[in-house]
Image (cartoon, rainbow, N blue to C red; front, side):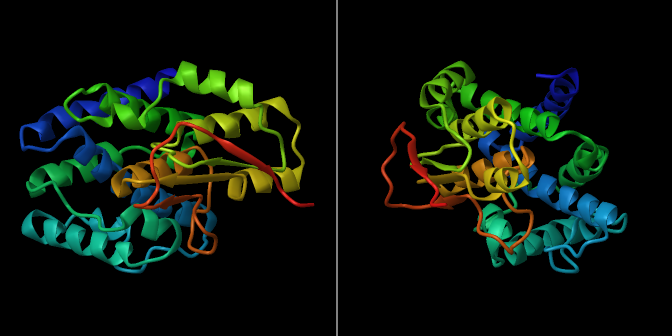
Length: 263
Protein backbone atom coordinates (compact mmCIF):
# COMPACT_ATOMS: atom_id res chain seq x y z
CA UNK A 1 0.00 0.00 0.00
CA UNK A 2 1.39 3.43 -0.92
CA UNK A 3 2.18 6.23 1.54
CA UNK A 4 -0.62 8.32 0.04
CA UNK A 5 -3.15 5.51 0.52
CA UNK A 6 -2.03 5.14 4.13
CA UNK A 7 -2.33 8.89 4.72
CA UNK A 8 -5.87 8.98 3.34
CA UNK A 9 -6.89 5.96 5.43
CA UNK A 10 -5.60 7.61 8.61
CA UNK A 11 -7.31 10.87 7.73
CA UNK A 12 -10.70 9.30 7.05
CA UNK A 13 -10.49 6.82 9.89
CA UNK A 14 -9.59 9.45 12.48
CA UNK A 15 -12.95 11.12 11.99
CA UNK A 16 -14.71 7.84 12.61
CA UNK A 17 -13.69 8.14 16.26
CA UNK A 18 -15.56 11.44 16.47
CA UNK A 19 -18.70 9.96 14.95
CA UNK A 20 -18.49 6.91 17.22
CA UNK A 21 -19.31 9.27 20.08
CA UNK A 22 -22.60 9.98 18.32
CA UNK A 23 -23.43 6.29 18.14
CA UNK A 24 -22.32 5.55 14.57
CA UNK A 25 -20.77 2.15 13.98
CA UNK A 26 -17.81 1.64 11.64
CA UNK A 27 -20.24 0.16 9.12
CA UNK A 28 -22.46 3.25 9.29
CA UNK A 29 -19.46 5.53 8.82
CA UNK A 30 -18.23 3.55 5.82
CA UNK A 31 -21.66 3.79 4.21
CA UNK A 32 -21.76 7.57 4.61
CA UNK A 33 -18.24 7.82 3.14
CA UNK A 34 -19.40 5.68 0.22
CA UNK A 35 -22.27 8.04 -0.59
CA UNK A 36 -20.14 11.18 -0.35
CA UNK A 37 -17.16 9.76 -2.27
CA UNK A 38 -19.39 8.78 -5.17
CA UNK A 39 -20.95 12.26 -5.32
CA UNK A 40 -17.56 13.98 -5.16
CA UNK A 41 -15.99 11.83 -7.88
CA UNK A 42 -18.98 12.21 -10.18
CA UNK A 43 -18.60 15.99 -9.84
CA UNK A 44 -14.84 15.85 -10.54
CA UNK A 45 -15.34 13.62 -13.59
CA UNK A 46 -17.94 15.97 -15.08
CA UNK A 47 -15.65 18.97 -14.57
CA UNK A 48 -12.72 17.13 -16.14
CA UNK A 49 -14.47 15.61 -19.16
CA UNK A 50 -17.41 17.95 -19.74
CA UNK A 51 -19.69 14.92 -19.91
CA UNK A 52 -23.21 14.98 -18.49
CA UNK A 53 -23.52 13.65 -14.94
CA UNK A 54 -25.77 10.69 -14.26
CA UNK A 55 -26.66 12.38 -10.97
CA UNK A 56 -29.77 14.59 -11.37
CA UNK A 57 -29.41 18.36 -11.23
CA UNK A 58 -29.97 19.71 -7.74
CA UNK A 59 -28.67 16.58 -6.05
CA UNK A 60 -24.99 16.79 -6.97
CA UNK A 61 -21.86 17.38 -4.92
CA UNK A 62 -21.79 21.06 -5.81
CA UNK A 63 -25.24 21.43 -4.22
CA UNK A 64 -24.24 19.58 -1.06
CA UNK A 65 -20.96 21.51 -0.69
CA UNK A 66 -22.63 24.91 -1.22
CA UNK A 67 -21.40 27.31 1.53
CA UNK A 68 -25.01 28.24 2.27
CA UNK A 69 -25.84 24.59 3.00
CA UNK A 70 -25.56 24.33 6.78
CA UNK A 71 -27.49 23.15 9.81
CA UNK A 72 -30.96 21.70 9.35
CA UNK A 73 -30.95 22.81 5.70
CA UNK A 74 -27.87 20.65 5.00
CA UNK A 75 -29.27 17.66 6.84
CA UNK A 76 -32.57 17.83 4.93
CA UNK A 77 -30.86 18.26 1.57
CA UNK A 78 -28.56 15.31 2.22
CA UNK A 79 -31.53 13.15 3.20
CA UNK A 80 -33.44 14.21 0.07
CA UNK A 81 -30.35 13.51 -2.07
CA UNK A 82 -30.00 9.96 -0.77
CA UNK A 83 -33.68 9.29 -1.39
CA UNK A 84 -33.56 10.69 -4.94
CA UNK A 85 -30.44 8.75 -5.94
CA UNK A 86 -31.81 5.53 -4.48
CA UNK A 87 -34.60 5.74 -7.06
CA UNK A 88 -32.12 5.75 -9.99
CA UNK A 89 -30.85 2.78 -12.00
CA UNK A 90 -27.39 1.31 -12.62
CA UNK A 91 -24.53 1.95 -10.20
CA UNK A 92 -26.44 4.87 -8.67
CA UNK A 93 -29.37 2.69 -7.71
CA UNK A 94 -27.10 -0.03 -6.33
CA UNK A 95 -24.96 2.27 -4.19
CA UNK A 96 -27.80 4.47 -2.93
CA UNK A 97 -30.57 1.87 -2.58
CA UNK A 98 -32.45 2.46 0.70
CA UNK A 99 -29.68 4.87 1.77
CA UNK A 100 -30.24 6.84 4.97
CA UNK A 101 -28.44 9.70 6.65
CA UNK A 102 -27.11 8.43 9.97
CA UNK A 103 -25.06 11.53 10.81
CA UNK A 104 -27.50 13.42 13.02
CA UNK A 105 -25.20 16.36 13.82
CA UNK A 106 -25.26 18.76 10.81
CA UNK A 107 -21.97 20.35 11.94
CA UNK A 108 -20.19 17.00 11.73
CA UNK A 109 -21.79 16.24 8.38
CA UNK A 110 -20.55 19.61 7.13
CA UNK A 111 -17.04 18.83 8.34
CA UNK A 112 -17.13 15.47 6.61
CA UNK A 113 -18.22 17.11 3.34
CA UNK A 114 -15.86 20.10 3.40
CA UNK A 115 -12.75 19.02 5.33
CA UNK A 116 -12.43 15.32 4.60
CA UNK A 117 -14.04 14.51 1.24
CA UNK A 118 -13.99 17.98 -0.29
CA UNK A 119 -10.31 18.64 0.33
CA UNK A 120 -9.10 15.70 -1.76
CA UNK A 121 -8.98 15.56 -5.56
CA UNK A 122 -9.99 11.94 -5.95
CA UNK A 123 -9.72 11.67 -9.73
CA UNK A 124 -6.11 12.84 -9.58
CA UNK A 125 -5.29 9.66 -7.67
CA UNK A 126 -4.67 6.42 -9.49
CA UNK A 127 -7.24 3.66 -9.17
CA UNK A 128 -4.73 1.78 -7.02
CA UNK A 129 -4.44 4.65 -4.53
CA UNK A 130 -8.20 5.23 -4.30
CA UNK A 131 -8.97 1.53 -4.17
CA UNK A 132 -6.27 0.70 -1.64
CA UNK A 133 -7.41 3.53 0.62
CA UNK A 134 -11.02 2.38 0.56
CA UNK A 135 -10.08 -1.27 0.95
CA UNK A 136 -7.93 -0.29 3.91
CA UNK A 137 -11.02 1.18 5.57
CA UNK A 138 -12.94 -2.01 4.85
CA UNK A 139 -10.16 -4.03 6.45
CA UNK A 140 -10.16 -1.87 9.57
CA UNK A 141 -13.91 -2.28 9.78
CA UNK A 142 -13.50 -6.06 9.55
CA UNK A 143 -10.95 -6.01 12.35
CA UNK A 144 -13.52 -4.51 14.70
CA UNK A 145 -14.95 -7.61 16.39
CA UNK A 146 -18.04 -5.72 17.56
CA UNK A 147 -19.10 -4.90 14.01
CA UNK A 148 -19.16 -8.54 12.90
CA UNK A 149 -17.86 -7.39 9.50
CA UNK A 150 -15.03 -9.91 9.43
CA UNK A 151 -17.30 -12.42 7.72
CA UNK A 152 -17.37 -10.15 4.65
CA UNK A 153 -13.62 -9.49 4.43
CA UNK A 154 -11.12 -12.28 3.68
CA UNK A 155 -7.41 -11.60 4.43
CA UNK A 156 -5.54 -10.38 1.35
CA UNK A 157 -2.89 -13.13 1.46
CA UNK A 158 -5.56 -15.84 1.30
CA UNK A 159 -7.43 -14.05 -1.48
CA UNK A 160 -4.32 -13.75 -3.63
CA UNK A 161 -3.36 -17.39 -3.01
CA UNK A 162 -6.77 -18.55 -4.23
CA UNK A 163 -6.47 -16.23 -7.21
CA UNK A 164 -3.20 -17.91 -8.17
CA UNK A 165 -4.87 -21.32 -7.91
CA UNK A 166 -7.83 -20.34 -10.09
CA UNK A 167 -5.64 -18.45 -12.60
CA UNK A 168 -8.41 -16.59 -14.49
CA UNK A 169 -7.77 -15.69 -18.14
CA UNK A 170 -8.86 -12.91 -20.51
CA UNK A 171 -12.32 -13.50 -21.97
CA UNK A 172 -13.60 -15.45 -18.97
CA UNK A 173 -16.37 -14.48 -16.59
CA UNK A 174 -15.33 -14.61 -12.95
CA UNK A 175 -18.32 -14.94 -10.62
CA UNK A 176 -18.38 -14.93 -6.84
CA UNK A 177 -21.81 -16.02 -5.52
CA UNK A 178 -21.06 -14.60 -2.06
CA UNK A 179 -18.80 -11.67 -2.87
CA UNK A 180 -18.76 -9.72 0.40
CA UNK A 181 -16.81 -6.51 -0.15
CA UNK A 182 -15.34 -7.76 -3.44
CA UNK A 183 -11.86 -8.94 -2.49
CA UNK A 184 -11.91 -12.10 -4.60
CA UNK A 185 -13.27 -10.27 -7.64
CA UNK A 186 -10.61 -7.58 -7.39
CA UNK A 187 -7.89 -10.19 -7.02
CA UNK A 188 -9.13 -11.89 -10.20
CA UNK A 189 -9.18 -8.53 -11.98
CA UNK A 190 -5.63 -7.78 -10.88
CA UNK A 191 -4.44 -11.26 -11.89
CA UNK A 192 -5.74 -10.90 -15.45
CA UNK A 193 -4.50 -7.31 -15.75
CA UNK A 194 -0.96 -8.14 -14.61
CA UNK A 195 -0.42 -11.62 -16.11
CA UNK A 196 -1.56 -10.84 -19.66
CA UNK A 197 -0.95 -8.16 -22.25
CA UNK A 198 -4.52 -7.13 -23.01
CA UNK A 199 -5.78 -5.51 -26.19
CA UNK A 200 -8.48 -2.82 -26.21
CA UNK A 201 -11.41 -5.26 -26.40
CA UNK A 202 -10.01 -7.42 -23.61
CA UNK A 203 -9.55 -4.37 -21.37
CA UNK A 204 -13.14 -3.31 -22.08
CA UNK A 205 -14.40 -6.79 -21.23
CA UNK A 206 -12.34 -6.90 -18.02
CA UNK A 207 -13.77 -3.61 -16.81
CA UNK A 208 -17.41 -4.07 -17.72
CA UNK A 209 -18.24 -7.74 -18.25
CA UNK A 210 -15.66 -10.07 -16.67
CA UNK A 211 -16.66 -9.74 -13.01
CA UNK A 212 -19.99 -10.74 -11.52
CA UNK A 213 -20.85 -10.86 -7.83
CA UNK A 214 -23.88 -11.63 -5.69
CA UNK A 215 -24.19 -10.50 -2.08
CA UNK A 216 -26.88 -11.38 0.44
CA UNK A 217 -26.66 -8.22 2.57
CA UNK A 218 -27.65 -5.02 0.78
CA UNK A 219 -25.34 -2.77 2.79
CA UNK A 220 -22.34 -4.99 2.04
CA UNK A 221 -23.25 -5.10 -1.67
CA UNK A 222 -23.13 -1.30 -1.57
CA UNK A 223 -19.60 -1.36 -0.13
CA UNK A 224 -18.55 -3.94 -2.71
CA UNK A 225 -19.85 -1.84 -5.59
CA UNK A 226 -17.95 1.18 -4.33
CA UNK A 227 -14.80 -0.90 -3.79
CA UNK A 228 -14.88 -2.10 -7.40
CA UNK A 229 -15.76 1.38 -8.67
CA UNK A 230 -12.76 2.94 -6.92
CA UNK A 231 -10.51 0.29 -8.48
CA UNK A 232 -11.77 1.27 -11.95
CA UNK A 233 -14.17 -1.66 -12.38
CA UNK A 234 -17.74 -1.30 -13.64
CA UNK A 235 -19.72 1.54 -15.25
CA UNK A 236 -19.76 5.11 -13.93
CA UNK A 237 -23.27 5.81 -15.20
CA UNK A 238 -26.61 4.07 -15.63
CA UNK A 239 -26.03 2.91 -19.22
CA UNK A 240 -24.57 -0.48 -18.22
CA UNK A 241 -25.61 -2.92 -15.54
CA UNK A 242 -23.44 -2.90 -12.40
CA UNK A 243 -21.27 -6.00 -11.77
CA UNK A 244 -22.85 -6.62 -8.34
CA UNK A 245 -26.38 -7.56 -7.36
CA UNK A 246 -27.87 -7.94 -3.91
CA UNK A 247 -30.00 -11.06 -3.56
CA UNK A 248 -31.73 -12.16 -0.39
CA UNK A 249 -32.00 -15.78 -1.44
CA UNK A 250 -28.32 -16.50 -1.98
CA UNK A 251 -26.56 -18.54 0.69
CA UNK A 252 -23.04 -17.50 1.60
CA UNK A 253 -20.18 -19.51 0.13
CA UNK A 254 -16.47 -19.09 -0.52
CA UNK A 255 -16.01 -20.16 -4.11
CA UNK A 256 -15.51 -18.79 -7.59
CA UNK A 257 -17.20 -20.02 -10.75
CA UNK A 258 -15.43 -19.58 -14.07
CA UNK A 259 -17.01 -19.81 -17.50
CA UNK A 260 -15.66 -18.96 -20.92
CA UNK A 261 -17.32 -16.13 -22.78
CA UNK A 262 -18.66 -17.26 -26.18
CA UNK A 263 -16.61 -15.88 -29.05
